[in-house]
Image (cartoon, rainbow, N blue to C red):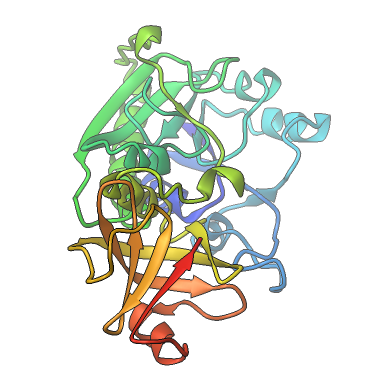
Amino acid sequence: MRIIFMGTPQFAVPSLKAIAAADDHFELVLVVTGSDKPRRNKHAEAEPSPVKQTAMSLGFTVYETDDVTSQEFADIVAAQRADVIVVAAFRILPSAVFEQASLGAFNLHASLLPAYRGAAPINWAMIKGEHETGVTTFFLQQRVDTGNVILQEKMLIEPAENATDLATRLSEAGARIVVDTLHLIASRKVVVYRQDETLVSKAPKLTRDNTRIKWSQSAKAVNDFIRGLAMKPTAWTTFNGKTMKIFKAIAAPSPETTPASPGTIVVEHGRLYASCSDGWLELLSLQLEGRKPMEASEFLRGFRHDHQQQFFV
């Protein structure tokens, strides 16, 4: 079975490796990924995507593109005479591309569809306080994330993990069902079912606006928000007029400070606390604008403050 694999970030790497190792009848004829670009920060040198690095180490042919709508790309895909196209964390493909696969094109999505359709399903499941999520394979169709479901695998969200931890676990589960899906397609044993449109929820793209912490929410909601955005793109607030990214926090008893309105940050006894609508969080790991990421204790050692001092975000 001739396969084209399309993906870019680390999330897609386990699936690529699993296909390469799975079956002698799987012929991976092309790996498609995004072009080389700065990936750690905008000032860094351009570097290949995690998928490109893996594909090259395994000896596969790689095609890079940031324009999946071009006729050139459609022609390259058509020339491969693929039986199946596998998509994992890539771009939205036009039908002129995904219809080139004779046995179909399917996507690996990091949620239990139809829950959390969209660009950031792992983040939003955690932000919304879900206790369970999973991975889904589904056949591509014109409307994004709406195709018929092939396989799903459920997974509990651990209370102490963040979105980066969860993404790692989901990527491994995703690799398993990608290979299982390919076996079903190869054996002509695929049974699909339609998504229930009454159960749809959204996972929109993460932006500067929707990653800002709303301290007026409960301490649990704020902590879920911080966990759901760590370690990237990261929940943020302000501190002394500068952007402060928060990587980790925990529920905390009230400091000695008198009750404070939500959004009050208190330095007390060498610890950093933030007030929410119904309680306090202790901020454990952070990054102030212009400085490196650090533990709150390290931040406070280099920060001149009184024994007890308040700041407002």
